[in-house]
Image (tube, rainbow, N blue to C red; front, side, top):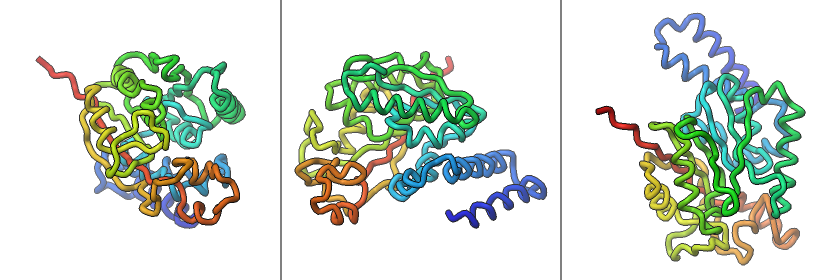
Length: 283
């Protein structure tokens, strides 16, 4: 959506609120949420380099698929440098964003660097991050709790589950997330999707993980599978690189070697899956 279109959309929303007597309350809330999501995604507080990745990560479509609304309590698990956090923070202006980070003193240097960068972004932009709290989650060392039991409306994790499975804590990670989610709440997972012609490597050395494996793993923790979408699919991704998924952007592990080829492929093929924690039956 270009800036002109976004402005036109904003005017439309104003018109709907003023003249739209035929719109139901639910319709108006949905339009309002869509407006605020667009506003967060196209905000000037996001860097141009981050915005360039929207074409692969499709944040508006993805967050709408997970049914994220501005007044919700959302837990983002292992947010890295905060690519999605920079959208969720402003968007959840009426809600609460919980960030489950690795330890600040982790023995993995990239965790330490990512945490430092993310905390600085939040500290430097207090108006964008009004309701943010932190917890610790770093499989296999720290397994939670990520939040109080039955306390969050949505849990989101982007390109992390393959890491947890690789540490041997995939099952335990899903069980911990299950505890934190409210009954009826939604778990959204995006991850690098492996081909179905090979058995799943339990160490996940390539970074790719089979979609059917993920669904089975998450269902085993008690979740109900709701739906999937091809929003973040990339059918140019052959998934057969000697350096795994990190061959592709943004990592480009081979640096200048065949750089143009991998840039043309783009970021990895990704599954986008939605699960629900069953509601407690009323007896």
